[in-house]
Image (cartoon, rainbow, N blue to C red):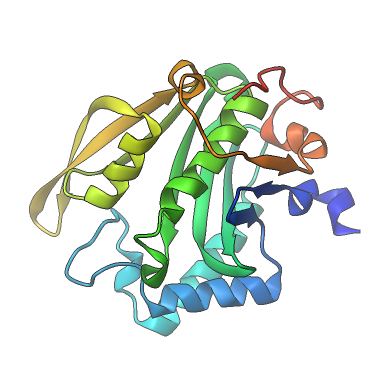
Length: 223
């Protein structure tokens, strides 16, 4: 069975409303359709890589190719876990958790997108909180980092809700103009001091070597 060779297909995070896991082929197609429908207001670009400017069919295909490419490039030293987010059994977006040399750095980073018609309902905060729980309670992370353009109020609002602190800025050229990114950092200490919706993690133990960790769950399970 595939799960015997690649146990990540059995990893699942469950929150009160959501499931986060790898999609099967038909679910990946449905996720691509969500991207084709639109991810943000066309008048505003929230991403450094402007993939959402592609025509709908190409945008959908890019979602499929990106999913496959990240799995194909996976190593225990450097990995990007791109989980599809399901609401009522249907894909609504993706939530990434990524790290390099996690066992040494104890730091993970996040990225995400959510279909435009599903925004404004608190889903973005709930799905990022789910991977924060995975990182802090099960993967031994001490820090979780994120970033957003200074005018990306939705993303910055999610970070503020979860307790992230300012961690500096980056200046970038974007089509001939300056855009500033705000870096953000959430520590396990701050995370433990806040209340969160419950998260259930299933199928993790056989995945731990793929995260570059010993094949037993982290003792930091109080998050």
